[in-house]
Image (cartoon, rainbow, N blue to C red; front, side):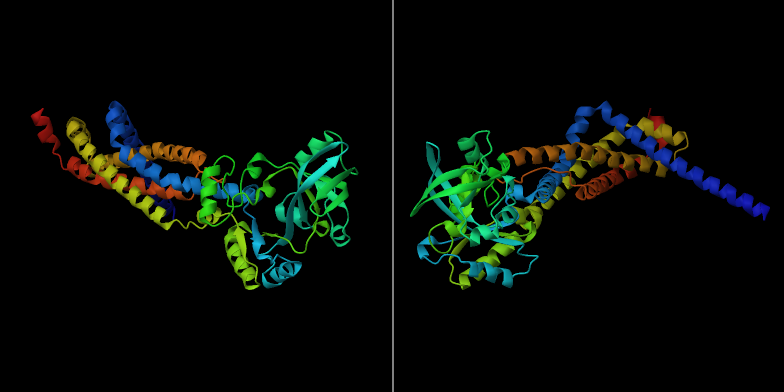
Length: 445
């Protein structure tokens, strides 16, 4: 038993020593490869161009998709991702009603339609003291803060009782409150309002919070409207939408009032809160549902996020993969050729290693390792280049959620493919190096 125990211990130590020797050889081979690369850096850099650009092309679209999805999921309200807006054709004279809202709630799941609000927008005038100015009045109800993710900062918002009782109250947005009341608190004060058909005195019951510049400049389609206005307008017109009709949602100067105190019956707008992932589907389904009810309406929803999140651009992905494969193959051919040249330049080194005791397999592994190391170093240059390309592109894109993130899921596959190409590229040079006769090389010298 003791002899078996000793034999087992010796075998285990031998296995451990063999593993350590293998690891040492791998690291030594990698060190030799890097040392040889730095002897001729310009040639190495030019040879690695194919692999570098292959990795960059593979990382570039994935980095943009990853960054955009993360940014969108972090705060969907900033990018108009979680709302769908419907505008009835006012010329038809068949406006929306609360019956339409109730029908939507009954016909769709609560997980699909999280909230619904009506809205009417009327231009008029408001004044306090001796000052008067043009103003935009948004008639809505108590569901508006939740649906729009637009909360009050001071006082309170409209309630169901305010709408039911036609209460003469209002909530000011930030800029109009600052313009007419300065730093003083407007809550509890009154304003004089003139709208088509009536003059009212309203009591201010609250002030809305200030929104970010990004949110104010992102339209319903998901584009940076104020910075890329021409592009956004062209896309809107191509879709049959009016890019200016939803401006009331992107100001800080509107006055929110109970929808019941505005003149007329029915309302022009319906907004639905939903999940960003299904927003485009809900837009299509609800639009078709309202059309069946005789309401000819337009649907506004973010058109960029579904394309990015669901990765619908199959042609782009296929093209990216094709370019990646072509660049990778060309890069592998270049590495193979330069390594064949390297074998010719390193006859003495190969002969000396053979004389010192290295066998053919050791020489072959040396050159295969060098091919893998070359591609691995090219990957380290290609990944930052791809991220840089994605960053520059994100700044030029007209859509608001354009951002950059590190594609951690795709990165290992990219490294694996490049290393595999490096190994394949090193096989032919490795066979040539291993087949050399050290005695013949030393005799020639």
